[in-house]
Image (cartoon, rainbow, N blue to C red; front, side):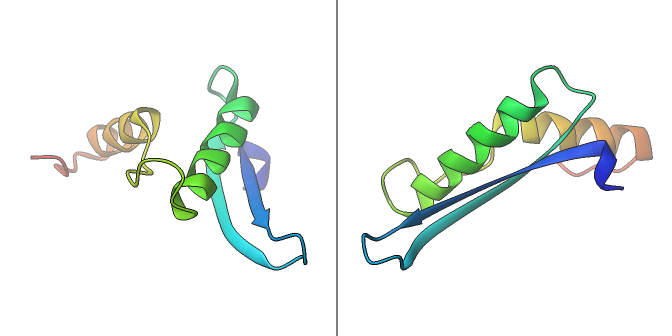
Length: 79
């Protein structure tokens, strides 16, 4: 449910109001500083899509979360 996580949304717009890039991130609320992480991840993604930052948009924390989930479910995803 939506009560379990924050969603960060960032839009980069032109002076005329057109959307140039967007970034979204979902972080579960049970993590320390989850709101700040959602904000930061969405900003970095928007900047990456706008070609200002590195093009690798998956954070270490997101890889850790995927790894934790897969280990709980017995899924081997990272080889």
